[in-house]
Image: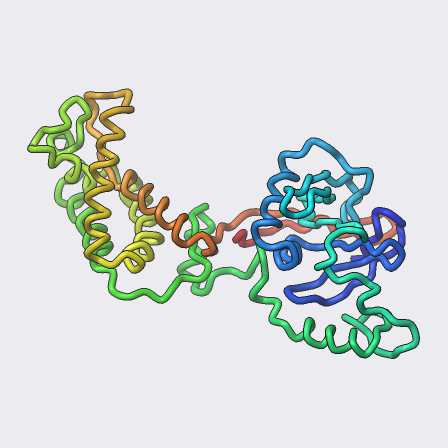
Length: 333
């Protein structure tokens, strides 16, 4: 697909750089970056903030998107990035940077010298000896490590099945040690469900009732965790629990994780005692502790990739006003 400069209208030239491809305008020195490339040059935090600001922005740029030709959004940069503005097309995952901004992003003048016979990325752009060496280094970088938001599916057929039911999948699971506490908690939930068969009397007796927080010497704050209202409730809880809990236990250590479990149960019960609207209804399930696990996971493993399956529709231009739509699914990381 040929991109055209939103400023001059001329065809953009493709070039390879560390982490992927980008496009530039030889006349204006403007550069078109994918979100992946923006993360590389502007940093993870910078690209993320620009993306969020573009989502919240109501200002439309005069420059059309080089891909879909729709007006891009104007995203104001935070002060620590320079305080300028960038044009963003969230639909196409593209960011336009003018020639005067961000010297850390390669410009055509950095590489191009007329009269040489070396080409970058298969284009007819000529470069100098220094540019040839830079290009050689950039092209040799492993682009797969920076595949970005959209990436290949997680390895293993069994891991792809939950994704098609809208459940999260760890894209790159870590190598873990023994996580006995997580397996014991999960096994107890399953065994208790099989033994009680969702008995209303057992739920009423061992569930946590906010009106009676100290019943059975306060032990219902812990016994309620192992009770579930049905098989779907149990299965969904155990899935989220086993995806994230083993990482948390491996990071903490089993001994510390055990006290983390006890403290979370007390904290959840306290929240139900204070905020519950149904004081006489027993609260059961592992969900409260899972929220604690997710909070710890998000804080400790903020750079982990979690994958979801989403449907997508993409338009391909066939020229002369004709085109076709491609429908399918892709993994969102």
